[in-house]
Length: 187
Image (cartoon, rainbow, N blue to C red; front, side):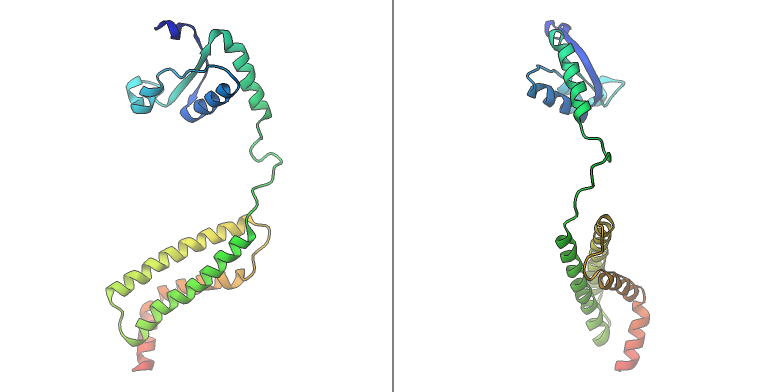
């Protein structure tokens, strides 16, 4: 051990992110925290053997009691997760705007599929582009539905937006049958 490490007292052992947060808190309060093996744990944590992801936080022996008291006070004053505080507000205007974009996306996806479907058998490229749009569209819909679930009330046009999702999936799943049906009508 070096001269410096002999004077240090370990006050916490835990994961790297918790130790870094505590180090920042203690530095802000005027203490002199130190993380032994900080660089080696960052570069190659497996070289240190057992407790690969465990990091220690140390302070000079003269500051140990005050630093522990500071950490305890910080824990006592920290907000409790899910304890009385309401969930973050969902921006209702943003959810409504996303719903509008999804409804217009339905029109776009329908056009990409229906125009080639009516006039000619779509090429592989057109099918791939449409499938790509569908994947993005469904992913955006999942995001929309999760945001609606978090909000207290459904946004304006919610029913139409969900209907667009259902119709899009039905159209995509029944593509071959639709092609045969439209081909028999047009030709």
